[in-house]
Image (cartoon, rainbow, N blue to C red; front, side, top):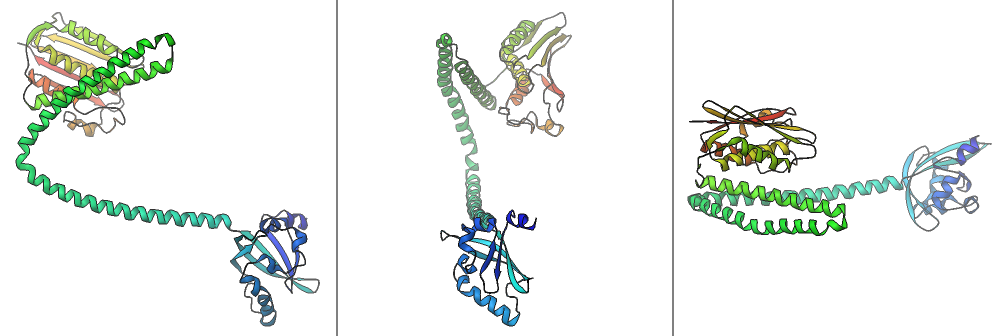
Length: 390
């Protein structure tokens, strides 16, 4: 049983006599040193050592036998081994003295440290790399601080030109918004033509990617519209043009239009309350408000959901309500909801500019209306626009 244990041990086990000659070596040690038992047994153990341990090993044994000073006996230490092909490897060596049949033999227990050393080297390299990154990051931060300081000084100097820059920005936004429309229209047209010409091939991949192109163009168009609307509002170019129109007819048109862009199995349910349907408001501004709110309801609600769209006309007041059961708005964010470029912290990767509700509130205000809402996280949101009617 003892022989089976030694021969199947994971670590190497070697025994030598008091002259340093190998008496036994187990298979694990043979594998480590790339030697056969016949090559090692009977030879001096120093054949498995690189210099300078090779030349000094016999002196270690002689000194111990003369003085009794256990330089390595009974202690563990890290040493280097020499394989048959000349390569060196690290291992932990533990040597014990054994009295056997009236003589002394020494047993060495060998644990290969190659993997541990490789791991340590990897850690050292990683630590050195991290230090280098920290130095680079520190330098980058210092440069950023300097740049921020310079930027602060430049901003201070440019405050006197704020009005001029604001006007320039407005002109640029207006120009860019108009200029982008032409290539976006070309992309949209090309995507539609690709979809048409690809129909005979009935390839789902083509249809899928064409749909992605159309959605991307629609998103960009919506962003440009938001920026253009904001620019016009900031410049005071938007005025309400009141006229009498059929609110129910407009709402039905919006419902039909938005149902086409709804998610899978999302249903927009429209209902009107009241006998009257004619109102005196700006139909274009009102349509923009409703499309924006219904679009948000679609965007922030999941598939297989209902979006309630209600209009109500009663004496002296018109009310429009859009309610969903989507992600809701955190209470801490609700006070900032109508600020330009603000987005709630639970929107994640859902695209948006943070301008829509700001535009809705300002359009409603141009028609003497106001926007109210109720919302709970994961319970949905309800927006209501109310207008006084003469």
